[in-house]
Length: 365
Image 1: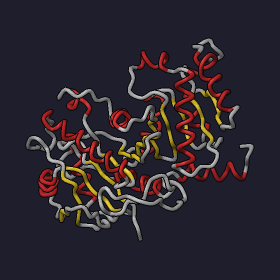
Image 2: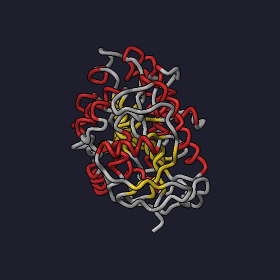
Image 3: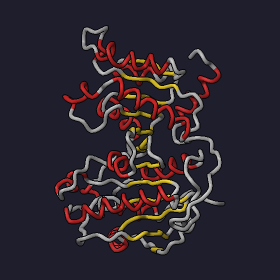
Image 4: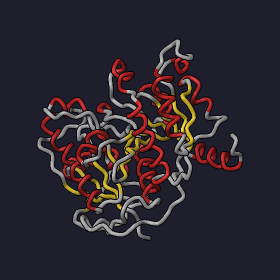
């Protein structure tokens, strides 16, 4: 069986990223996995956790076997203590992303999965860094990407990401919504195999503006943008009051929700899925998934880090590869080729899949 090749960046070395990599070494995985990280950091963390791991090296990336871990070495600049941040290692964290990015663009890797990084210490080291999503977009020459989280039977995409709340209203423009919805719609088709996605769109203001009495963004910006895209055949519902939108999904099946800002859409999803949610970057010329949690410095090296979100991130990446959106890696870095066959979609969200099936049977729902 020709399994997809995934690059896994180990993330902030003082956080739980290395712990998750070591935990994965004990799992059966549906892929060939190469961890991008410092092998000594990983070896020391395995010893600290009391887990026996055989570390593999070389250009050939074998089928993953429990008890072993293939490592693409990217050295740290300073010795690492679990739970203790060191700005001197911030360049190492970015080098992990650069190596994974280069491998995905060359076809050596079919997808990238990322462990959490610490934005604060990277900025303290003098690097302007707002997050994985923006960094990967900038360094792949991608004009616009969309952050989407999935889990708990939901897919939630964001119109804006890491903005102060006072800046959100000004950022919501017709051009932004047009761009975000087009990316979301296209990737639901290409990367998730959904022929005609239905997207529920949240309003910005309480009660979606209450007919203009609580704000006019819905009337002046959101509704006109949706109308233009509906005219092209997109199935868009909204703008809807955010406080009732998620309960509406129980009765009005959809394939994704578009929230206007970070804390409008993600609290519900994280409540429903924490521990197994996945962050997916849409619009990139390759597949990137990630955990939906942070570095958890207090858990690093303790054996208490949960691997569930990372496992799901890997499973989702594998299933997205099955849609044929990335080249088939050869098992040798730098020599990817071919196109993978069609898959059946993302099985980690049965509630949404059931909704799609229900909509097919009941088109008026």
